[in-house]
Structures are given as structure tokens and as C-alpha cells.
Image 1 (tube, rainbow, N blue to C red):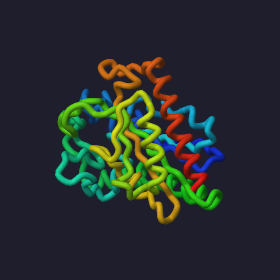
Image 2 (image 1 turned 90 degrees about the horizontal axis):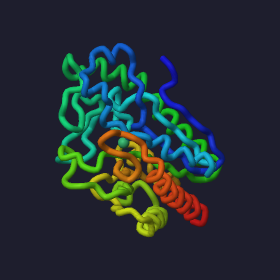
Image 3 (image 1 turned 60 degrees about the vertical axis):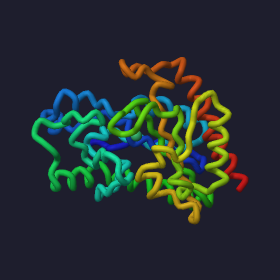
Image 4 (image 1 turned 30 degrees about the vertical axis):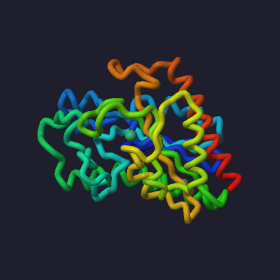
Length: 262
Ligand SMILES: [Zn+2]
């Protein structure tokens, strides 16, 4: 099996994690998947491309290679629910966000789930944890930005149309308040609609690694895909993306600057 992620090492205390833009599928899986599954419709399309500028900020960048349909890196390995009372998308999802079956041969059993956790989930989390520990040792603190995107309208997951920028700090528990407030204020000065800790408060990665008392601050940003791509065709819109990248850069610079001062 090839490496399950790509990693760029930077010199700043910031780690950007991109867990859902992977498109690879193991060969044995591909043959069992439906047309809807193979379309990988729930991918966080182009998020790695959107954030490739973070290398220039000196950030570390961790990008998953395999599809979230193999195993969802932003869910706990025991598959406990992240949002009480909401439709769960599953650690090894058997259906798409739209409710279509991903596999011809039914849901994934516990043995296969355990193998996928071992082969794909664990190495990503080992790298995440080791990088944050190294950043903390070197800088005294670490900043984690978990980068996501989703279709603007997903009736099974949320009502109506999502704001453009959905900042998640697990209700203020994953990140020190001055940092969360500064990032949110920066979003408020951008051309985009935004919300903090709305429908998306941060998934497992944000909740697991954000420990402000231990100087690790985690923020999730869920971007509505309409602001940088054509949601119907899936095409990246370089012009829209350029404006969004400017806002993302300012938000990340604000996070780093505020952390340096505090
Ligand atoms: Zn995502």
C-alpha cells in the first residue's frame, strides 16, 4: 500500500489538515462500488488546491490521499455520533450524503472497518499527533486548522443553504477565545457570509486535538463549495477561488499573529 497522506513540513506553528479531499480508492474496493460511490460526490473538492498557498506562510500541510468513502478521518475510530440527533455519515459510510448506496454488496462489516482504521485512519492520526507534538516542543504551542468544504445544500445533513464560511471551535472548547474571536472577526470583514459554531462545530479532529489548556488550538473551517467552484459540474473556479484564497490567507495570518502575541 502506498503512503496514505502527503506531508509538507513548514517552519511555523501552524498545521493545516485536509482529511477529505482524497480521491484514491484501493483496487479491491473499486470493483464493489456503485456508480454513485465511484463518483466520490461527497469529496471536499479541491480543498488541497485551495490551500496550497499555506506553504508560503511556513505552515505544515497534511493531505489525505484516500477517499472519505474508504474511512472518514474526521470521525472517531469507534464511530460514536458527533452531532446528537443528526443523520450520521459514518466511519466507513455505506451511503452518500444524498442517501445513495456506495457498495453493491451492502454495508461494511466490523472486521473490514477495523482493517481500514488500521491501514488508513491510524497513520493519518499518528502523523497529526506527532506533528502537533513536535510543533508544541519547538514553539511552545501548536495551531491546527482542519480544512473542509461541502455542497451548499445537503437536505439530509442540514436545513437551507449553508453560510460561506463555517468556523468550528467546538463551542469554544477547541481553541482559546482570543484566537477564535480574532479569526471570526477577520471572516466578518471579508466579502463572505460566516457563522461560528453553527451547524458545523468541528468534527473529531478539531475536538480530539484542540486542547487550549495544553496550548494546542484547533479550528475547523467548513467552506460552502459555491464560493470557489461550480457545484453542479465540480469544476474549480480560479477567479472565485483567488478571492477566497485571499480571505483564507488573512484568516490564517490573523490566527498566527494573535497566537504569537498571546
Ligand atoms: Zn470535510
